[in-house]
Image (cartoon, rainbow, N blue to C red; front, side, top):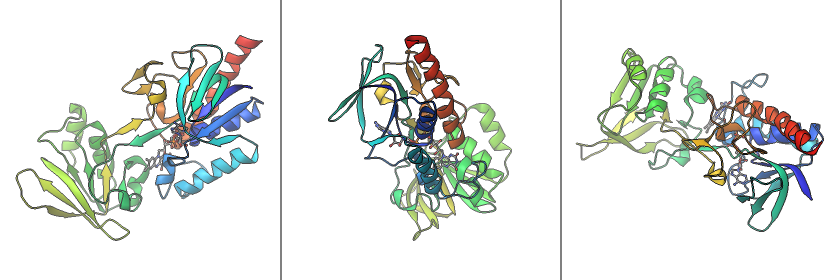
Amino acid sequence: MIYDTIIIGAGPAGLTAGIYAKRACLNALVFRDKYSVNSQICNTYEVCNYPGLNNISGQELYDKIENHAKEIGVEIISDKVTELVDINLDVKKVKTKENVYETKTIILATGAASKKGGFEREDDLVGNGVSYCATCDGAFFKDKEVAVIGGGDVAVEDAIYLSRIAKKVYLIVRKDFLSATKILQNELKNKDNVEILYNSVVKSTIGDGKLESILYKHKDDIILSELTVDGLFVGIGINPNTELLKDKVEMIHSYIVADETCKTSVGGVYAIGDVRKKQLRQVITATADGANVITSVQKYLLDKYK
Ligand SMILES: Cc1cc2nc3c(=O)[nH]c(=O)nc-3n(C[C@H](O)[C@H](O)[C@H](O)COP(=O)(O)OP(=O)(O)OC[C@H]3O[C@@H](n4cnc5c(N)ncnc54)[C@H](O)[C@@H]3O)c2cc1C
């Protein structure tokens, strides 16, 4: 059997594409990597910016989207896609460890993974003080003290954003300078409640079920220093999961170049959600891509097979 489209990834982007494909009567298949989380959104305990679903946990929001897809009969296979072959041909091949699937179009929706801070007990407190997304979780730290790790654009933007919400923001920078763009650095300098700790690296967290403080080391000190904070934001960026299309489609800094149509540089191959080069990576922009891409796929199939 040759599928109309195979969607790789069952996060908000991939599942939305599955829902729209089903409603467009396309013969579609969605893959989910059974060895990884269902979606990055499952890592956050509260989502407050998805319209119509205020104060919902990330897992609950994911379950709602997944149930919707399942209810209307979207076919989801729990298996990791390992390779994409013949993507320039009309019939493209999607490989898993044990099977090969044929399809007229491929939609990559494999999301992204936050770069880890690399300190002890990092995973223990994710969602309970440790966060990788200031835009998403910043509001939970109103009038509290927080720290941000990093000295580049992401961390400085996070520190500026958090300075409007938190009482105090510590920016913990490994080097003795910031690498963020000058305009961001200037904006940061005007913030009275931001303190920059240069030459410092976070080594561990303290807190039983909830972050209470962090231990960090200044390069000239022998012993660790303790800083009491309610939140710790790791702002050193994310890595898009785009290995499957590496050297096969146009990319910038590992993000796939595609506009709102989600078309990549190869005909019949599309990129949606966090893998796509875009301004804002959130559930709402991922689901928007999932909807848009099916219009593109339908046009492609009509042009090719009318
Ligand atoms: C801690 C945190 C908090 C966040 N909070 C918010 C928030 O409050 N509001 C908001 O709007 N956004 C938030 N975001 C961002 C949001 O989670 C992402 O923008 C969104 O999940 C992107 O959706 P996606 O479908 O592109 O990718 P993902 O949700 O990452 O899904 C990727 C999917 O691809 C699958 N996959 C990967 N590789 C393979 C493979 N080789 N084969 C098969 N399947 C594969 C995975 O199993 C997964 O199902 C947060 C992100 C993080 C990390």
